[in-house]
Image (cartoon, rainbow, N blue to C red; front, side, top):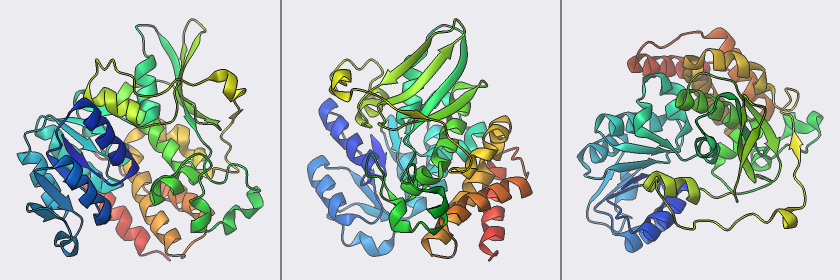
Length: 356
């Protein structure tokens, strides 16, 4: 397989599962964690490696190394692998998804932004979601009429904070996730609840029109629920691990033990909370965005700009959501093609980056 984002948490888990299934790694694509990348090269012997920048090339212990976004697209096109695992972070993951689909490959997709920004123009038959929430929904589906699909959220770093203190939250504060360790951007997205807005949009593109919602489940043991028309509800319980959805992406008939079962007696109890707009202002636009899902490109571009401003200490934490909501209200450019998606993304970034 081709693995994009090999040194992130999803990439690391993908390699564990690939080794368990005896799947060869044709290409590794990584960012700047060259130390871990070299360990992966030693263990998995990829044919080709791509890194983020030219300066990193000489640090990589491999004789076939490229760098940059164009190189990623080229290795996808030329690869003989049937599967591309896209675990890249941000809008830059969209072009590789498009290239993989155009090349006739299946995409095991963990790059949220591909669907959020370009979902209207992607062939869903070639996409296998490996976010635990979408995997959970897929796992639960039956040939019965569905009323609503619900995904769960952890609540992020500030789910128990005094709301009045949120504006003063620092970048370091956002990284203190209550349940696990993730990359910087996704952990910020978890704290703002933008990640859950994104996952609802992804579900809309993956599973079609319908009613979608999210709730907080503080232990992250339930990943998805489906309400059926008959009044029954099913829930997908599993220990939090990307290895299960990745395993099914590699083999839909997978029949091996991947995780240990949850012991509900040991768990004792579960806690559910509503996602409220005072703590998570972004939730104000949820329904309108789901009704107009092509506007996901606007929300994503604004989010990436706002996060960078927050990292640069130019705005406060709560200003991230304010910038996104304002952009959603101000820009109603609806893309009619994938080319429009890239143009709108560029336009919004240019305008917002020029705004103090």
